[in-house]
Picture 1 (cartoon, rainbow, N blue to C red):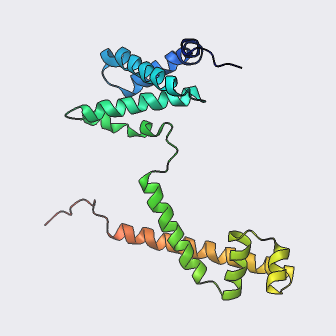
Picture 2 (picture 1 turned 120 degrees about the vertical axis):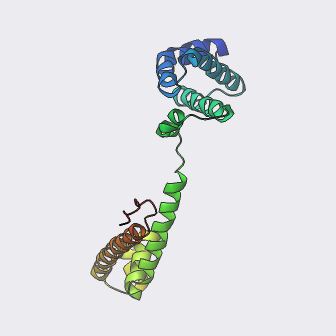
Picture 3 (picture 1 turned 30 degrees about the vertical axis):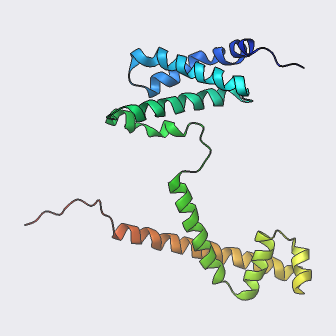
Length: 191
C-alpha cells in the first residue's frame, strides 16, 4: 500500500489531537496569548519531521515536540520565572530515560547488592549466581555443582533471604547516615 500524501496524513492523524495539544500547552505555558503561536510551531515541526520520516506513534511524537518547544522557549528567556520552573514534573511526559537521580540510586543499589553477594557463604553465592544471574535451572545447577536439587532450592532460598536482609539493613544505615548530615536543618536558637 502506497503512503498517502503528507497533507492527508496530517489532517487525519495530527489535527484531531488539537484539543489535547491545546490543553497541554495551556497547562504548561503561562502566557495565554502565545498558545496559538506555540501550537502552530508544534505543527510546523511535526510536519517538517514527517516529510523526512513519518512517526509510527503520532500522539507521543506530537507531545514530545510540544515539550521540546516549550523547553527551547524557556531556555531562550533571559529570566526563567519561578512559576515556569515550579511544575517541572511535566517535563518527563514521554521521556523513558531514567533521571540522573534514578541512575545514581540504581548504581548505589547495585553496589549494595554486590557487597551483599560477596558476603554470602561461597556455595550459597555460587548457587544464587548460577540460578539468578546466569538463569540456569535448578537441575542444571545441581548437575554442575554435583549437589541435590533440594540443596539448590535450599541454598537459593537462604541466599535470597540473606540478600534481602543485608540490603534492608544497608539501606537503613545509608538513610540514617544521610539524616545525620542533613544540611537543610533549621539553625537552632542561640540563647
